[in-house]
Length: 80
Image (cartoon, rainbow, N blue to C red; front, side, top):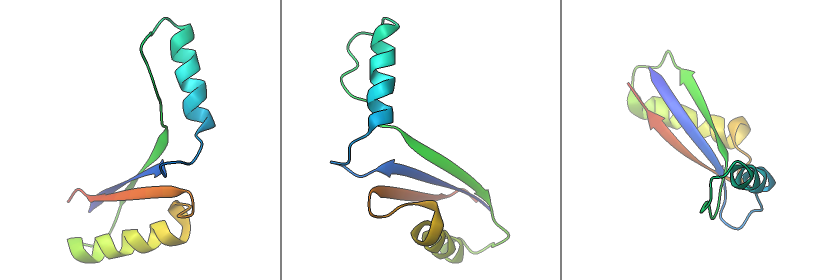
């Protein structure tokens, strides 16, 4: 079973990489970019075949390792 976890900084947490990307885009002539927030995507291949069990396992993975839940939000997508 394939799954994807999208991890982004929580609202209100400063995003220096996002600011650097925004500045670089402006320097390259892409005017009008008023904000950039960057994140990460983690794709996993799981042996689990039950979507509910897979989602529970992914949530535990995020809480324990994949996301820093103090400053990051995550979204789990089970792809089948």
